[in-house]
Length: 102
Image (cartoon, rainbow, N blue to C red; front, side, top):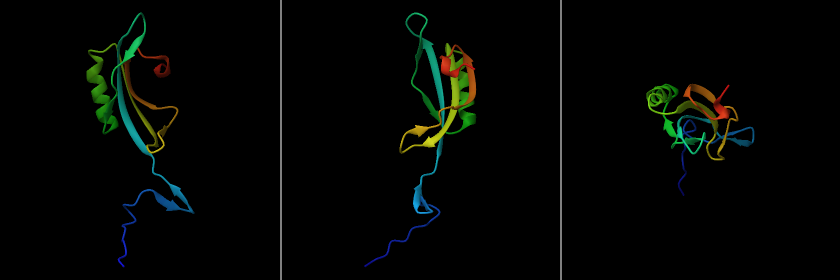
């Protein structure tokens, strides 16, 4: 019989105090908006980015040609699909839906 050896540093989820703790993941998203029907905004396909800085640069570039654009970060559990209720705004420009206006 063989024994499976696992490097504990690479093993996630981590077992701690008798329960499973899943590491949180931070996602960086750029969302652009174009004109929809009437005065409504129409979201384009969200753009995932590898870092907050890349999200900011992407949003700045899109702001020149879109009605509105926002870049934000949110942390959460990717397996459950649960992320922070309040994302961290990295960049915003132009007309945006109410949830991004502050």
